[in-house]
Amino acid sequence: MNNTGGDFVNEKLSELRKKAMALPLSPGVYIMKNKSRDIIYIGKAKALKNRVSQYFGSQNNHPEKVRRMVENVEDFEYIITDSEFEALILECSLIKQHTPKYNILLKDDKGYSYVKVTNEDWRRISYVLQKGDDDCTYIGPYKSSYYVKNSVEQAQKIFKLPTCNRKFPQDFRKGRPCLNFHIKQCCAPCTGRVKLKEYNEYVDEALGFLKGGDAKTIKLLTEKMLEASDNLDFERAAKIRDQINSIKKMRDKQKVVNTSVEEQDIIAFAGNSKKGSFEVFRFSDGRLFDRENFIVDDPGDEGSALSEFVLRYYSIREDIPRYVVVSSKLSDAEVLEQWLTQKRGKKAYISVPQRGEQKHLVDMCRQNAFETLGQQEGISGRQYAVLEGLRDMLGLKVIPYYIESYDISNTAGAENVAGMIVFENGKPKKSAYKKFKIKTFSGQDDYGSMAEVLTRRFTEYKKAKEEGEDSGFSKLPDLILLDGGKGQVSAVKPVLLDLGINVPLFGMVKDDKHRTRAIVSEDGEIEIKPNQSVFSFVTSVQDEVHRFAIGYHRQSRTKSMKSSSLTNIDGIGEVRAKALLKYFRTIENIKNASLKELESAPKMTHDSALCVYKYYHSEENI
Image (cartoon, rainbow, N blue to C red; front, side, top):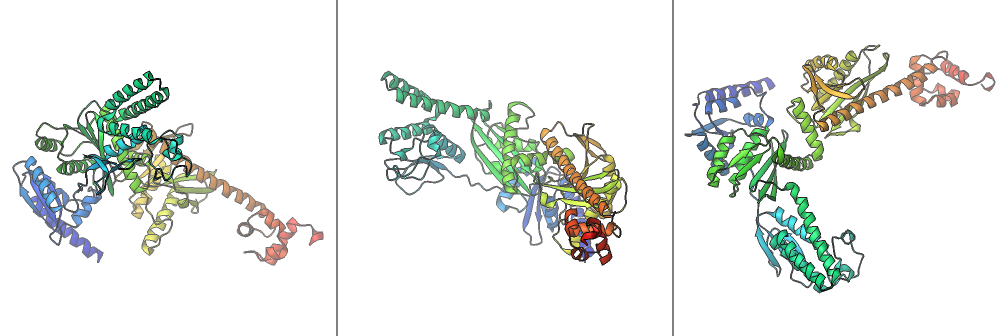
């Protein structure tokens, strides 16, 4: 049945490829449809024949998203245009009209935001996403909810306004002031010590800050401070001075996201084969005024994903900046730049910075994309960045969320054992660790030992898959790291090929001081020291697998020494010695056991039990 299905799929791909090869070498738009004639993907091409035929060739080089899309294609249509630019405009229009399943689709949910001021004696300031049908005052609208939220939070801290749910004056002196009072971020009206007139002055100053900005507010506050000082009201002057200092400190903090370029958007991508995170920093007058994040499924490769995102993002935005700065090269930057220029009405530029201030801002934007995606994946942004760096360094197709590492440990060939550890989402998963005792040979052969361990591990994987069991071996790792060099990798590679296991395999080598030096493949070494975070991570994996393997070896050697002490007793061989230790746990328990208890132990007879009892007890006591 499976073969028949495979033949049908291959036949369909062959037919579609034959149709694609008949397309002209002209620019245009292609429209993929499924069995129900629904449009599932729309794309543009500089040369229709070359682009469309790629989909229906070998599927090995396609990202997972493309493979799934191709599996569902029953037929395709195309529209020829005069230029790639016209194809881009048509593609944009058709995607907006049909919203195909496999295109990146963004929802324009950017509403307006407001500053809300309650109409009561003890007024409160907050930010809201829409006006309410009430008696409150609303300042706005503002396009950027990020700007409004940040500004209100800053105003509350600078002018020490309460953010709690207490009602005034009803809740005066009903409890201790909260932490904000003790860290000097709230004037604590709840204590009953703040006069209403003084409190409303703080509110008015906060509203002035929100309406006029920090420069205007500092100027007005400075005038008030000097006036208070001239009137010998030094306490009030000191409070105003503290407010001015708070505004200046807040402004200094914001300088890390200031830029010498007055108007620009910075767009960064972080993703894997399943999900992608697009972070947008928007700058006006050199300052960050808005930021957005979009999570999408099946983003594909970074260049294509960013290109499609830029197209979709500015399709739902009217304000196009002069500069669009992206985290990596777009697959069709020139035509997108032409489209942005036309939409803006003035020249627009797309760039990928390599150094300096702009590169720093892109890295910051990218880190935020990591963090948001990490929250979706249950992993921190820092760990996500490390795993992505490892993926790029090793040339992996996917981010290695699930890593298995192996090490061999023995003493001159004796007590030959191995340890397997697991790192999931960049952290050790100790519940998945496994121990192996080498069975197929004795003596020291690390290559043979590693081959045996991997054979047993993936034989168990295939068995679990066939029987539908969810065992400790039923999950396939994204990456295998061996504690060893090229010889270890070469010994294990044939094992994986024979078992049909397609998992990236690398070794970890140390220097003469037993410190991690590099990652090695069959093709040679890959230096990892230039990337400090990846280097630290690989070092932690190598140290952990070595610790686990040598710990198991010491445990086995201790048991063996105990077992060998039992074999000195007449009638007790290796099998009975191991059975006794397993049953009684310790030599001390065996020594204190009665004759009857020894007889009841596995593998024991009356005579052998008597020999053990005599060995630990004098004749007089028997």
